[in-house]
Image 1 (cartoon, rainbow, N blue to C red):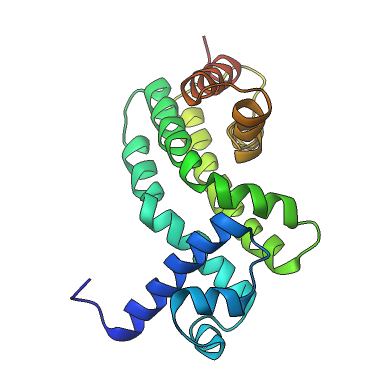
Image 2: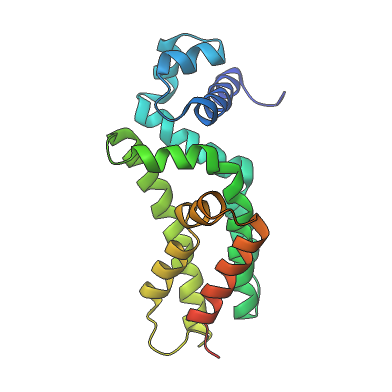
Length: 196
């Protein structure tokens, strides 16, 4: 971190402190609590992020960066075999989900009552849906989509089947292991949308 400037270092420090606090207390943690956890003033948080919504948006993007999820998707999309491409993209996402689950669970819960949370969540989920659209488009290009599936429907199905909500229901509510949940999601998606 020695090669980054003070402003960037402060910004990353705020985001990392905010992640830890939100994972522990929930997304309703206040700006004052986040500032205290980062060892700065409330005003400094606003200087760096503009609003609570800006902070939440940056927080989710920071999680993406820390987990290198979009780099992993790029590698997955480079596979020539369509079935392997889909599996690799799902592997990348499902390996990432447990790390974001403590915060994601709370954001899902609060998004219907908190506009900042809803906007931050929508931003990240729209970007994720964009990845699944790329995957579906590549499958269609390679004539690997099962009959009756459009690209849009295939992307929607992957997005829904592999969502943090689905993963949480399987692992938390039903007590499935991570490995079992991943295997079931990948099998279900592949069997449903890939041409035999």
